[in-house]
Image (cartoon, rainbow, N blue to C red; front, top):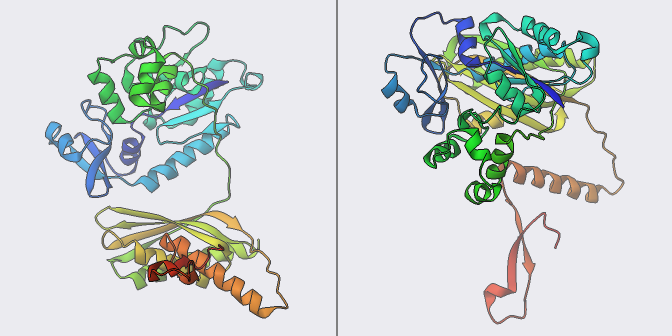
Length: 393
């Protein structure tokens, strides 16, 4: 399948520059993973940096750089808006990370005439601030490599015999972890041509499934299918507090107000909320984000706020919150329930169902019953055993 890759280098940094940063100093964008601060993105002039590099190591190279706390939900909002623009050019659009968009080109020549006209149409739809690079080839990885080799003013189109094209390109372009790339360099494998020249067996022995994958990509073979994004109805709400607060009750009041507005929109459709993406931003710019799922669609504010409170109790905020937002990404209708004339049986079924939900939330069995195993045994410990309440046998 012929693919057009739209590469958006340093997309998070460019989003911040568009929003509120206009500086001559280099920028380093940080994110927190556990207790460690890592580099999420950086200004193009910081050529020695890499993503997922520890912040202390980055500062040792560029101590004068300005630090920015990553606002990942905002970057995804901008990225999704870009995907919407791309869907006006092609019905098959994939965007799984914040820097690369893939478009399926089959049959589009009937609309645009040729690849150059299509590339110009795509390029004109993207703001100049993102400096997009475009590449067209058979397969996603080759299209990505083609986009990597072009400036923002051109589109590289690969056709015919492309056997020699990847050979002189760096192994750092492979879609593998930084540790694997570092290991490749330690073995003296710096170019894709060096990787493709090896037999796949030793690579598999050293790197497992990643080894075979790297050999195929380095040889120009990529059978990865295009995964077009699925369109779904979204409802978004946000609110900014007049004063930053760390009090859960105040935050829940703000969330309840957003839920009330959302349910007003859903009443006419007679639908409820199946999944909510909840996010907050502290006054220091730190971001907290959690997905809230409902087994049955929440049809009212009381049901939704109860589940949200449970999540926020378990996962506390990173500091005083000044902004809250929610994105309802799953809508559904409440399932009908059939009543039973055997009330005791029905009550037991409801109890077991509640136990299953409790175990799902807490990650394991919580209620047990005593079961006779070897009541005739002379050893007391063998006579009975504790088994989960929901276990049938």
